[in-house]
Amino acid sequence: MSDRDVLIAGALLYGEGDPTDVLIRGGEIVEIGSGPAAAEGATVVDAAGQILLPGFVDMHTHLREPGREDTETIESGSAAAAAGGYTAVFAMANTSPVADSVVVTDHVWRRGQEVGLVDVHPVGAVTVGLAGTQLAEMATMAAGVGQVKMFSDDGHCVHDPLMMRRALEYSSALGVLIAQHAEEPRLTVDAVAHEGPTAARLGLGGWPRAAEESIVARDALLARDAGARVHICHASTAGTVELLKWAKGQGISITAEVTPHHLLLDDSRLETYDGVNRVNPPLRERSDVEALRAALADGTVDCVGTDHAPHAEQDKCCEFAQARPGMLGLETALAIIAQTMVEPGLLDWRGVARVMSERPAEIVGLPDQGRPIAVGEPANLTLVDPNHEWTVHGPALASIANNTPYEAMTFGAKVTATLLRGRPTVLGSVVQR
Ligand SMILES: NC(=O)N[C@@H](CC(=O)O)C(=O)O
Ligand SMILES: [Zn+2]
Ligand SMILES: [Zn+2]
Image 1 (cartoon, rainbow, N blue to C red):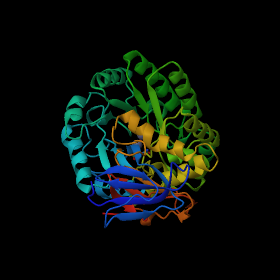
Image 2 (spheres, rainbow, N blue to C red):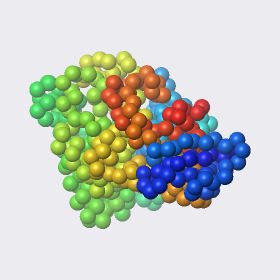
Image 3 (tube, rainbow, N blue to C red):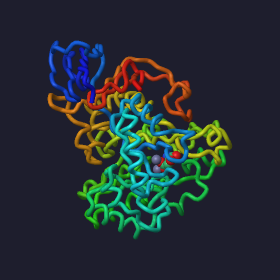
Image 4 (tube, protein in one colour):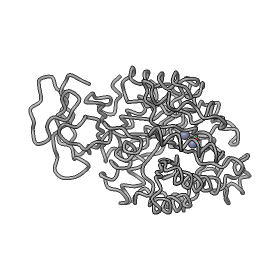
């Protein structure tokens, strides 16, 4: 919380209506209108032509602390998140050591609060060591200081159906969410690229759509029978969209996210054999990209999750099949959603607020995020300039790692300011450390 007033002057709330001033005091929105009186020494943000949205929430982030601090730390990842307009992120459990105990999950939460740029919520592992054989102590992690709300073995699929069934039963009793990395491992042995004509031509091992879809279908049925909720990480195929439609139509409590890269890129990128394009699940075909965009627009896919996955140069700049899967995502997410969803008219800015803030906050249960921009609400806010051209350059990003697939690409929208409980964490697109 900041003791200084912040006055956001002349912003378009949700991109709608007339330019409006928003006054923030004591971490809350205290006045909305025309020319509210700010106290002396207030921080005034000139928001002419800019769009004010609720702060973004990322259900899927990899910060590499503990274990690979050479590629990302909670501090550098928090800076990347703030720069991307995020006020809360969920840090996945595939660290070293794995976040399968309250010692690790509490550390992640505490360190995030110490850095103070974004709320870093720890994701706990579903199984001990992500090994898929023994349930982790989810209740202990949920009861810790970090109050773990979401559990996932992401990076790995909880592929044993009995283990997944037990995890879902246990999670519904605890009131927490299980997020599944849907990948049937028997179908992805040696798979490094989407199974299709491109991988065949390039001689790359294929990852069939069915590897994802068979788990999505199975887990929908398991969630139905357990009366539990299940969340699908990084949905990547048109078939997954069809299954989500079916499951939601049955009243099953299933939700899903899509990554910015699966909304923009396809497997034609692989021609160069550049390891930066290797990611799990793999970049698919144009028809999948189109289906995912439509699904995000109509709510079949609930939200955007970045799957921000920093990797060291030596783990990416090598033979394609040897490259570690994953790409940076936090700082480019908004620009890509603007280009793939807003520009073509699939979503308006209110829709962006829904898929990047409100829905993720709701799904995972964060009472102070994704809130309406209204008097009395916590000032977790993001300001977007919809007409700001910028070119992505890895070393200029706040992340330690540089594995952005968007190097040298130009986008038309940028986050200019972020506020966490009234404190500016980003001003003029610069992180306020
Ligand atoms: N997405 C990826 O390709 N990689 C992720 C793991 C994951 O999300 O499955 C990572 O941790 O690097
Ligand atoms: Zn994953
Ligand atoms: Zn991931």
